[in-house]
Length: 144
Length: 144
DNA sequence: GTACAACTTCAAGTTAACTTGAGGTCAAGC
DNA sequence: GCTTGACCTCAAGTTAACTTGAAGTTGTAC
Image (cartoon, rainbow over all chains, first blue to last red; front, side):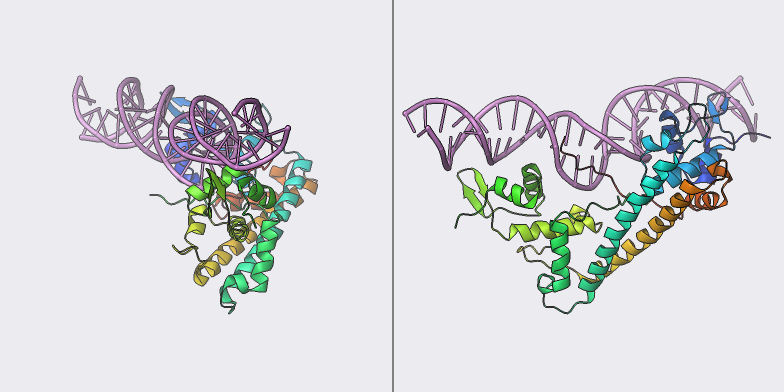
């Protein structure tokens, strides 16, 4: 059984080869060995990549994700950290839901100008008060 | 009635002076005039800043926000754009809610390892499949 | 009228998460 | 055994949204 090379891992995981090398540099993954210069990966790398994708999707930075792995490569996720992140996500979700409702309303509201719409103004006030914070990064995955 | 200067606007809006200058450079706001070299602002700038905060909180980029303002400075938000953004927010919210639930579960799950927890594995699979995308940028607003 | 805190400009730096490019190596197919 | 395409390394570039720093100007208080 031959171990997958970087192209194979990229193909099956959807993660670009350049990103795989980058992740290795950041100690997020490692290659099982080399065939000449070429990296060969243990199939377990797919699970690892899934874990990384999950972490990213949950708002963890790569650095935080790196800390979830023991030096020996085992996964060791702190449950308190998970709960804290869940709470943070929850707060973000609430804010975004308020935003969504406000936008939705503004989109159909027939006030002559959004600035004259009470609902919109309420949103504005909330945003101005700092009750609302930055959203998600739209790292558009377009393949230019 | 004297117009507020940049420090006053910064103080009352919570937006740093450097950011106000940056926003001006990006044509997001403008100063009403100068007193010597110093910028003076029309009080309407506060509403404008609130609108910018709202846009950012809703996931608009500064560039998108700039497009919401007519060349003459009037607000002209495209209702279709609002609705589209609301939809996008909605999708993001759904993903984040799934994440939150998964994390919450993983935090209390008593499986010996997260990798052995069915719920966690389901999340992993979803993340790996790309069903889930990047989250919010934690631009920590700490005042170092 | 002088000191100086607070403003000004402009360029460069910051951060995260990657991508791109130049120049080099090499395993596999013919 | 030679070609070639896919890999390699390492440095630099990219993007967004700002921040920081250096060097200069000036309104305001005394």
